[in-house]
Image (cartoon, rainbow, N blue to C red):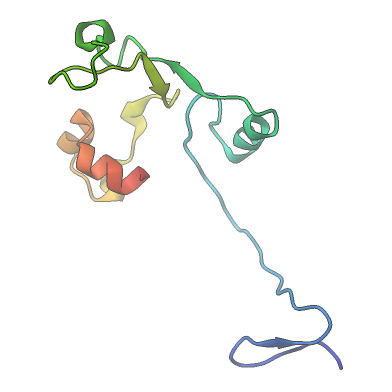
Length: 114
């Protein structure tokens, strides 16, 4: 029986795969993974993108305390940070005001990056 596609998209025949085309891809990941190729390279060698908190983000030493239950403090010394300039974030594209983007509105950040 020859390979056959029906109006509903059902495929009959020897090969049950349907060809697809990826026409574009973009990403923003921590560290050096600034494009899909670099992300793959990091994954291929099992490299981590963890780094200490960058000084330009905030004064991490002023907020650090080893007790995670202490209010108003952070008990971590680093995380996975984007290396690109955060001011390049396209807030209107994500339906965010520039003011929300400027302060890093946490709720919107969780919804957009997830």
